[in-house]
Image (cartoon, rainbow, N blue to C red; front, side, top):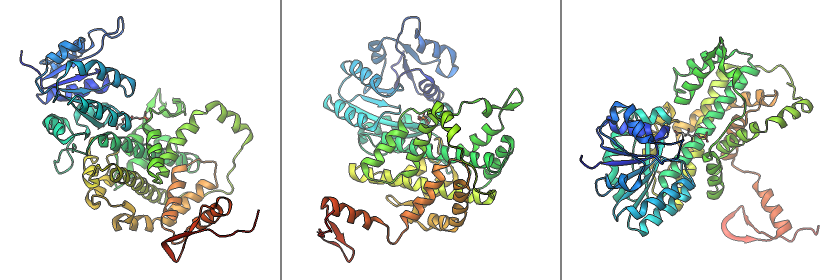
Length: 470
Ligand code: 6PG
């Protein structure tokens, strides 16, 4: 049998879905899964037997035989859990590889780990690509959005294969593009997930407002969201949320059976850390992360509920139109913050990420695909800030009154909606002619002689004032 184009390591849900996608696109595959006695036995072989599109693939649990089955330069895609498993497999794999071979990591690895691994493999004259893949199981199977980062030479070697399996945008363009060097692919995937966290949280807040203030039933909320899908608020996450609200088990809304504690696998926390490291106010994605953390203190919440009874100040008036417009603008602000963070990291790391092209490959296949993303891809230039573009600030400007009304509803009731409140506050803070930061500067100078710049001489020297003694 002829040698194979691509080797895939890891036959979990994502690994086998990518394999099936590649198989149905005529890519010759070698598949590997580890062997664990009584637990993971002949997994790759079983996957091959299960799916017709993998009939030409070969399956292994011996790494040496797997590597020997690949065409040179070898191209191996890791679809395994992020963290130590990736380092372990690299350690086992590299003695079996040769200079020029390419290892790709298709998981949600932390970008700093990826940066170190790129350097490690480079020292063996091998290539390492950190590839962000978004779209969940069905995306992996039918066409994900693919974000490869690493050397351009390595990308060109695997490009035809990645392009074959990627989603297509509405003009038929391929949702896979070279992002930049070293860890750029995994960085943008991480921020994709940060944006995803805030998009999900905003929808949870919309639900909370409609249920607790509007007193709408689950199916009715689903119906309202289905109406929003007919507008430019359309997105994949809105679609699944509308469906979730109408899903029933034994005649009752499924949502009533799901514990209200949100999980996470780390990318939201890494995005928040990155926002701090690069000094970018990504307030919405961090608020969404902390909302998940707060939800996880389940027992504490139940105890606190006995003491902190938060009642509505007055009967709040909720307008669906206000909520809709506030939601659309909050999403713009969320995307502004995420893209700003990517732009800053790209500048600091010399990745030269093209924001327009990035938005384009996020218009299909990925979890945050939406009509808004399509608009961003056409409006944004390589390094623009979304809120400085007329197409977006005009919309936010026009809805400020509605954002305030919804914030008033939130403040006056027991509904917790940190992303909506953050969005309005960010719009204010970002657009204020004179902030209150001069107070901070004076305080810093008072107690710590940290010095301040003068308003009428911002580029001039810094000053220290002799303040009244404490
Ligand atoms: C995607 C998703 C995917 C995964 C997240 C979930 O783009 O396909 O983002 O990567 O669903 O990792 O993350 P949490 O478990 O942290 O919510």
